[in-house]
Length: 540
Ligand code: GDP
Image (tube, rainbow, N blue to C red; front, side, top):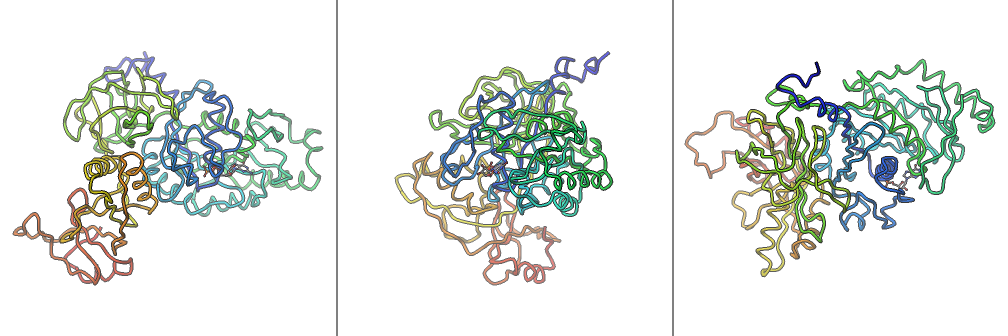
């Protein structure tokens, strides 16, 4: 008897498909090497024949996971991509995320769709601001973290110091899977603590090919000969120290969010990447369920269910279309299947699902829990929607983030008003920004809120390039939003009238896109003034 025997479970063949899936994202502070690592991983997955020699977006080289011209212009990744490849016995779903702080909302949503994350850290820098933010999101979502300490071919901070920093700042026990032999010009390779083997580092031309691996024991003559005597001593004593200082790797603890496996290497030189990939696929969890009303829906549940975590229009300017990305939580997707969008209650036929690969795509007939569906066409879904064949299931996976800056994006060409409206409507559906209606404002359009100002520039660039609408940006005087509830709601107040709030100077009252009343403040110093003056309100 297999688990498939129960009525409520997918057939045994689908159970096997689900359990061989690994769905993860790579996260990092910009420039730590996320794009380079992604490329090398794809090379191992056979997904691209030859990884781009050096992935410097600043040098205007596009990679498979770059879609928008703007990314190249600015040297940052704006859109998140989903790439699938086979490696050994695993089916790998790799979700790419933008690294820049201003796009973190997009990254946070992507993290709702993965089961693990690889965090890339620059060995010369250690933990940086964005690493910490992303780490916090992973921790809150219970996403297990694997750490790749990159750029060992450059002068790095002492590895013990890096471990210590990871442990004190992230408050997770580090479990080094391998250990570096030197750094910078003296980088000679890594010692695999699991296998007890040294992998000697050999520079290949730009790391463009799979790195040849020369393997030997730590006491081997070749290893001793390739390390200066003092380096050899440092490494052997470090290895003894970490044996005493760190816990043995325990995957249960990794999944429980108590421990993080650590790998050292150099993505650019394609060194340590294959070992990390193999170890990661071995350790990382198969698709995990999601909660519906406090109850976990298992991935092998027979009913299909999933949620929308990303919408992107006009991905390919030649196609002029829209992709809705869905993380399948349970069951099996079959082409043309009918599901219900729980937000609208409407039945929808999922006809045109595609497997995307950068600009390339192919029709997808079957997909399993853990996979990401990219539906192409005119679907009326919103971010966060649950699509399911089980009417009892609704996921609440999509957090909304507090905007840190505001702007009006105004149409500069009266003849383009229709295009402006439809462009704005589409981009708001994609969750590029949040809309606020300021009470009593003379502006005819909603004010927009975003985590970072670059989100506005993306919006404007897209209005211009995809909808042919020139715009201008006006900055309102507010930078902080506060949500609140009346302790004793005034039942006589009309729907359209705001609640009574004693506003500090420069403040305004507004509605968010879900029609909640909010207060807008000119600076964070006004928050305590607002709270002090309004004891009849509870602020969130
Ligand atoms: P991202 O912003 O995190 O995606 O970082 P990129 O992958 O674009 O890398 C940023 C820069 O670091 C690029 O110039 C890369 O060539 C460089 N880089 C990435 N990995 C390594 C490495 O292992 N060693 C060295 N020396 N440079 C690297």
